[in-house]
Amino acid sequence: MEYFNGIYSGKSVLVTGHTGFKGSWLSIWLRELGANVIGYSLDPYTQKDNFVLSGLENKIVDIRGDIRDKKHLKEVFDKYKPEFVFHLAAQPLVRLSYDNPVETYETNVMGTINVLECIRKTPETKIGIMITTDKCYENKEQIWGYRETDSLGGYDPYSSSKGAAEIAIGSWRSSYFNPKDYDKHGKSIASVRAGNVIGGGDWSLDRIIPDCIRALEKDEPINIRNPKAIRPWEHVLEPLNGYLLLGQKMYDEPNKYSEAWNFGPNIEGIVPVWEIGEKIIENYGKGLLRNISNQNEVHEAQLLALDVTKAKFRLNWASRWNIDKTIEKTVEWYKKYNNEDVYKLCVKQIKEFIGESK
Image 1 (tube, rainbow, N blue to C red):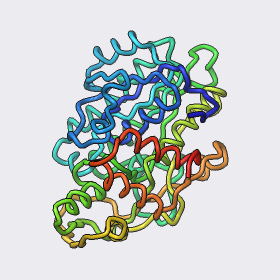
Image 2: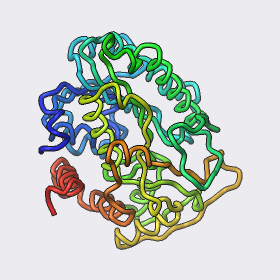
Image 3: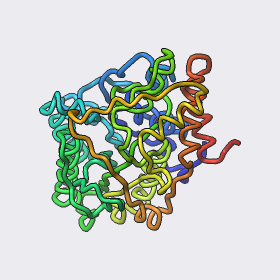
């Protein structure tokens, strides 16, 4: 697969969180680009995860470890000397963060700092792309999208931990990886923020797509707890395309792109949760939605959108699949995973995404 000017071919690339939903898709794409992929992560969430079903354990260097374990992490950096680092390992769930706030902060803040320190102390590492979230912004429930320069914050422990991680990334960039001093340190660091990412192989709790599929497979109604919440929905390949494109740009011009970037959908992809459920049912061919909203539930933002003008103009990045195509390809994975080679299914969707096949 020729893409991104072949920049990843033959390169040593570390992906933290490679057993997760986004991490598994990124690892597959990087492998197809010819990269030597090293994964560092906890065990996959279920035996039906994309990582497990695609057989990635036997296709890349698969290392199990906790991002909070800085000694183990440093040993991995010392052994494999990655040129690129994509840091995705995180505690990614809002509702779980209410139950485990300390672990959420330890993972999302100190885990990120551990990666930054390993990058700082590994001469061979040149590019670090730190994945955070759109929820890192101070959410004012505004109708326009947040820009990279807007205030960071967070109501819940998850969102605030990601805002704190962004502050740490900015501090390390200013203190140790300042673009003005690139000739001295030789490293380029960026943070990236995506919307609500969906696609095949995600079985996490408290996420609309896995909740829908679990219910559909059991012939049960789909429970929607926050039907009016509006989110920026995008297929997992959309932000990954942005991350990989950004990595290429950073490699070519390391002192020009070392900053924060948004990768979100077009305006028509910003729709309520209930509408996503309806589209899932339409594509799956059966199902029923049930509103179980409860005013006593823990707080979750009702309106959230990203402004992606910067990525469009400076990176020439753009969202490729509209919301209907996004749902179609997501449901396709879940309808086929039991009967097809999942790795080949993922590669097929990647090729369709970049236009290599029809």
